[in-house]
Length: 305
Image (tube, rainbow, N blue to C red; front, side, top):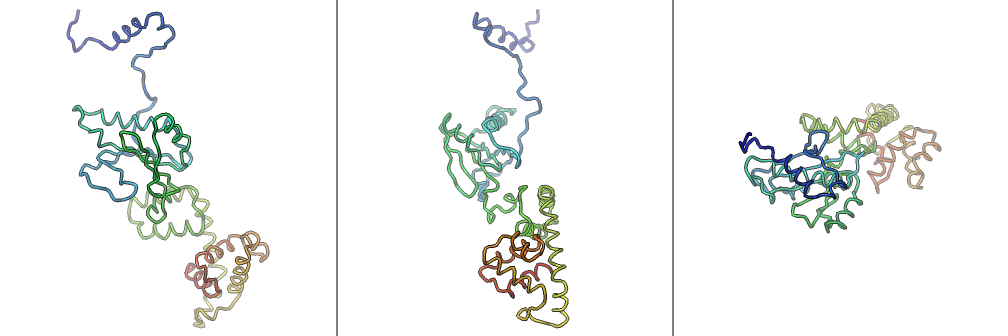
C-alpha cells in the first residue's frame, strides 16, 4: 500500500464520506466530483493593472485600484444577474490564483461592467438580495454601493459626448449627418494611431449603412452646389451676394424648416432628394439661431470644399 501522502487521493474519499454522512438523504441529491465550471476557458474581457498606484483622474477610471476587472457587453447583449456573478467570480479567482497566499490584496480589486442598456432587472435583484444600491456619479457612470469590492457600471450611450467621446461613439446606431461626419473629422486627426484605427474600423463596420448614406449626402451637396461654387470663384462674388438655383433651394428649405415640416414633407413639396434635405436641415440646426440664407449657404459651401 502506498502511504506517500503526496499521492493519496483525498478528494474521492471526501466525496464518499460526504455521501455516507448524508445517509438516506443522499438519494435526493446529485453529486458531481470535480465538476467543470465552464465549457470553454474562463477569461476576463479586460484586465487593467495599475502597478504604479497612480490616482486616475479620468471619470471612467477614478474607481481603479491596482487590479481592475472589466466585463464588456456588446450593443446587442444585455447585462444580467448571471453576468454579475460570473464577473464577480472571475475577480475572486484572479485574486486567489497566485503562487503565494494573499499576494493580491482583496482591497486592490475593482470590477467594472460596461454595457449599452441600463440593467434595471439586475440592479433591482442585487438590491433585493444583497442590499446593493446604485449611485449616479457622472453621465452614464454609476457606482454599486454595499459590497466589499468597489464596482462601477458604465452605460455607453449615456456617457458624456464631451468627456467620453470615443467610448460613447463605440455604437452601432450613429446617425448619418452630424454624428458620422464629426467622427470622421476627428478620426482624421488621429488616423496614424493603431488604437484609433482599430476603433474606427469597428465603428465604420457597425454603422456601414449610415457611412454610405453620409457619402451620398456629401456627393449630392457637391453636385447641387458645384455650378454655383464654380461661378462664385470665377466672378469673385462674396458670400453676401449669393445667387443661383442652389441658394434658392436653401431659402425654400429654411422656410419649411421654420414652419416645422419634416424632412420627408419638405423633400416631397420641393421635389428634392430626402437625403439632400436632411443634410440642409442638419446644417440649419447647427447654425441656429442664425438661419439666414447667406449663413446656411456658406456653411454648406465649407462642408463641400
